[in-house]
Length: 345
Image (tube, rainbow, N blue to C red; front, side):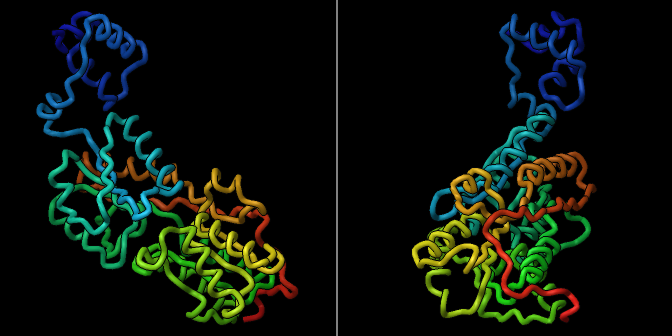
């Protein structure tokens, strides 16, 4: 069986160069890399990941925690984020271990898994995982604003409060004085940030935003996002007063549009719809074309992986990266009879 020494001799390079060519841990010229790979192929050499892990005392594996929801389907946002994580980890010579165990599982699970660090999603207010990971000394990065937060933490996120403010401003300028907000789970930090942004802009315009016009997703009440959107509109339209609905995701918007069709509600003439995410695959099936927010999930994944790898190499590293989200105007919003200016405060 060929060894790394055999490959190094045939390629005319050092053992460390062979190791770096396979691990991609440091940049090696294309010529040298090709020479190493040719020699390895000719000799039938394959790098032993376990042996290498023991030698460097690292697994070169990054953990990614994306719990599978009760309906068994991950969202397009999560799929794109996974792609970004894998792409960046692969570029830097790391494998990715995906953990799909339930969200409330013991965070100590990762201490038993062969990972050098982990990426966690959907941070919640007073999230017990954060303290636990800190106690265990595991390098971790959060996708979303962690709570509790201190300056030693690294995370990536969108400018959620700011883009929520932009959505509210857009609706108010187009005459919508009453909005129904189908928010994420109440304990998620993203839900708090978006709600804060929406309320701020309504306060600036001097327009009330009643609490009964805000509801939160719950797995106990709704099977999935589409069910959440469908039932929320079906059960409230005509009972609550609103001319526009803002949804947590495009799948929630998909359910809301379905309810509107069944109730004979004309979109956007009678009901405007905006989603806080933009699934390009799903939007192809939507008519009219959904007004939504581009979250750049792929880039969020890439940046989270970069931060984690930095942290795994040096625990003292801490950075916070904000990826700007942007409102993408589609065909599901229209101007109401009377628009507002921010002078009406």
